[in-house]
Length: 251
Image 1 (cartoon, rainbow, N blue to C red):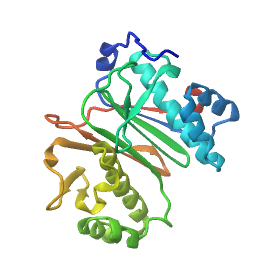
Image 2: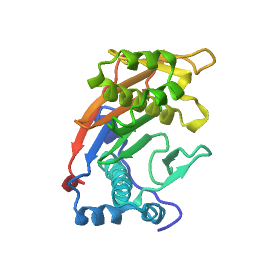
Image 3: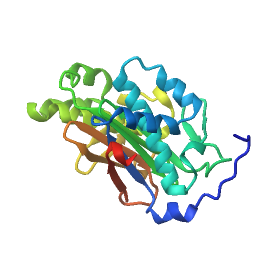
Image 4: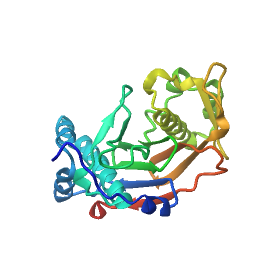
């Protein structure tokens, strides 16, 4: 592949999609033939990273997530899925190589056991996080160690039957925001707090900046997963999302 690539990517196609998009894929029914097909669109670095996973399901989620990203970018911009190349900043946040496509286009991906997701935005920061609901991990002690006090109190008041879902809703919202700002673990999870209905973020003293520019959503990806998205959208009253659920044969 040459050092400099120039493709006629279609910005009008991206704009026609209505801006911010989220796709997700349930991987539980994936077959070996699906894995092989997804593996073939990855670059050598992604293949090497995928091969390092010792547990087959973890390898499947990694490969599926990166294949989903490439497929989504191809759908939106018309560049072949194998041609995408990415740069990584000092904090580990990836971006599109400007020799291949629009560098300003923002994306984020996430994977957990049984589900992968990708968020794509033509402008502004975006983050997505998915988690499998596991009651054993929805521990109040974990919340007390990492969450803001108001969030811990929210969990304590939640009905026992809803506590695990509430925990992972908070967790995914927090992770989606952290991923959107691209500062890694340097931002403590207890330096900001969420409330629900509508979803709002509040920054604790010494925290970030203007909460009014952030928009959030939790999407019904599956009965046993939580998917949340964070987007920096100044001047927008709500998220205008284009969502799509895929099956393994769609990718």
